[in-house]
Image (cartoon, rainbow, N blue to C red):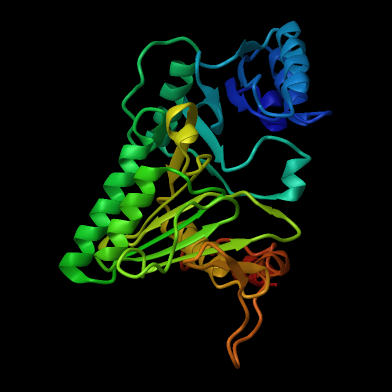
Length: 348
């Protein structure tokens, strides 16, 4: 954000602000960008629980600096986390987009475990630009190419993908769904996951907080497991995985599986389309959390959680500690794209 604020080629910055910290470098960068003559727009959510007063104060400060401040759509809470930077490059306009599961807040960034994606992919940039237009006064819900957006079609899109997984399993077997979320409450999603389980699809759920689905019920949810991880960091990332007949699909985003997220909030789920990034999230984040046998608790069919313990001979796996020890690992470059010197530095 600071770099964009000072870059002469940057024309505009748009961002959502849900929880703003006491001394926000993000807000400072937005003010600096405006002082440097850039178009700056911020969608500030005034109903972010526990942060209402602070958000109002920052909104006034941004307005005083000349930033175009928007308070979202009437009747909806803007919970999506996204930032759009528009830059002129060689006589063309390029959109850089950052989307996240977590807030643009330096305090929670140190306490919450979240994921973000920075991309200049054209279709995603167009989607985010259209969504910002919808939130800043242009009518219409938009037709999004890559994003799944609430309150318009997010629930329907997820239900369609669960149904697709059932059909793929009936055709070729090996159907699998894996979600990592904060909460699972929505009745329609729960019923869809029960149908998937009855069809034989393996469903692995990592739900940190409230879960209204009962796993392991004979004839209903035999193929569903639910675990919860509570540790040093607050698990806040949302990951949605569908095996999709081997053409794996992964979404990250801001939405939990609750009626309020589907119906009363502006939320986004964004796809991981780069195969290396997708593989890293599946193998080194999602699967690691699903295999945790130190911090995890398993939900039983009677609604009681029990601690997950390593099986005989199985090594202990604390997913959060695993992430800490590997925090410097990067996504590998394609074969031949990295020098030996760079490769050695990365592997170290």
